[in-house]
Image 1 (cartoon, rainbow, N blue to C red):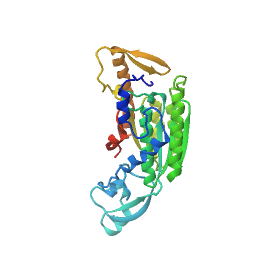
Image 2: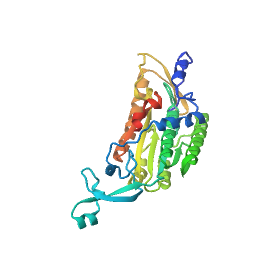
Image 3: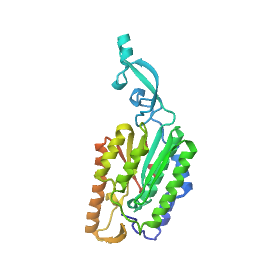
Image 4: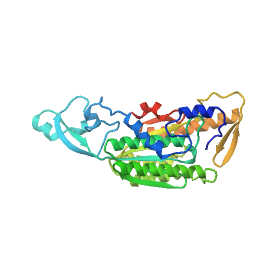
Length: 322
């Protein structure tokens, strides 16, 4: 897949007014990724769930595993039965449960898919730009909570590993790497070779990189997650917590109103194709199928998948990040 040609009309001026700060929707700048820190501050911690369900004192959307023992208290409805302290229960005759405190610096890893298929945008941003904004926002949030942030950035040609690091070191290495890889991908779209299993190899590398107890965020358009990816991701899920974001585009979801008769130029791999109504319907069907396959794979792993639209600014979709 690739980037459809955009008409140079007054629409460009309208889009410019809607774009995120410092962004042109196609290229990435350090300033726009630094500006994602503001979005991270807008993500409140969840404090409305029982501490026992979260297995930690700091609220989190996903339960932590790397934890220190804090105290024992009497069991309450809703507590995780796996944390029952059977010795204290036997001694007192009343059911007691253990409470834990999450490690101060939990490793958080982002699998960021910057494959050629994400360099596509029909409305506001390239999907790759939205993916970068999302990854950086999650990274800023991790740093604000005192966690370590690392990443595996995957393309058809390179896999860049960023080991989890704390505070400014972690976020700055991510921003620099995402910006450079995105630039390289844009300049190589017409010549890039396609490895159908490059995401499988990325999942294998992630399995070696992630330590038990890590939190893993997967950010992708889902196009390259073949059935072979299921095995390494299943291994990861046994020892790590995981969440997924599907980056979509209005044209790839059939949300745009198109005339009955049209010719739509689209870059498909290294080839430019011209879609008419019938061609577009077939193309759209393949896009929706790939998205559904990715979501189904995540469901098999018991991983929640949230959709992020590249046709909207990320600050309009913060509800999906909470």
